[in-house]
Length: 85
Image (cartoon, rainbow, N blue to C red; front, side, top):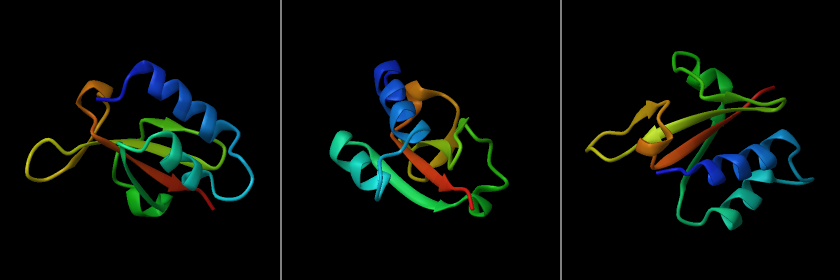
């Protein structure tokens, strides 16, 4: 589950990412949350959860054998951050 507080902190990180690698910062802020990074084109057939100036955010539900994209933070076990070019 991703809490509203976690979503607010993710928003803060992705709206104005720190210099360098913001995803490295993500890993230190959210050590228990699964993170996958990819190009936005790799996720073109999926529904985006939120969009930011440099990224698109997708929520992942990995509770079953195969993971899938969800828009329900209560079901989310991880995120995908897709980089915009």
